[in-house]
Length: 161
Image 1: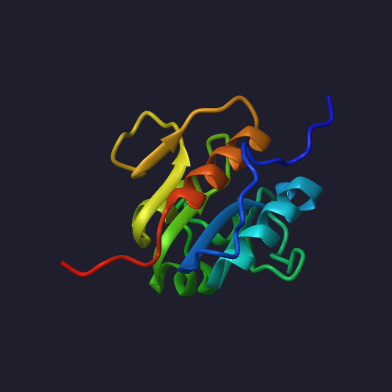
Image 2: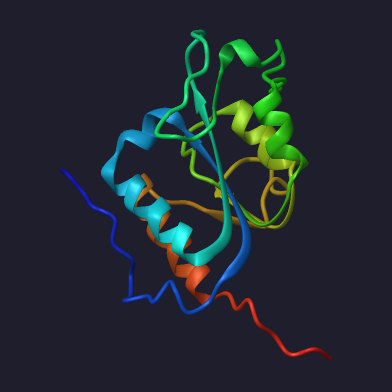
């Protein structure tokens, strides 16, 4: 079954801007059209989007679709990322950090836990403190729909108390 990305409701992504969004993704997912569409919609929603992809090979890292990518060669024996790209990514302070990896991807999990973010969104794990919002879905398309749904509900402008 070939599914495409669609949000549960018609959402105007351009009305509410979010400061900085970081996205962690598996490099093989970047080739999918639905992931590209999701990233374009997120890019319209933010002033600053930073994407880091993990390629599950030992080959040298490449620029995948103009996104910084790191490989198994750039992780230590405990699966902790140790390259310049991952260090630069983890130095940032994000308003929202989204991990698009649906399966166990320890380098991306490690980055998600160690990065500073006001809100962390990820898939359901056995570690409840990894994310602020955990979503359990059966596919990446459904996961992206749920993330889009919740992002549309967040307000970036608020009244001061």
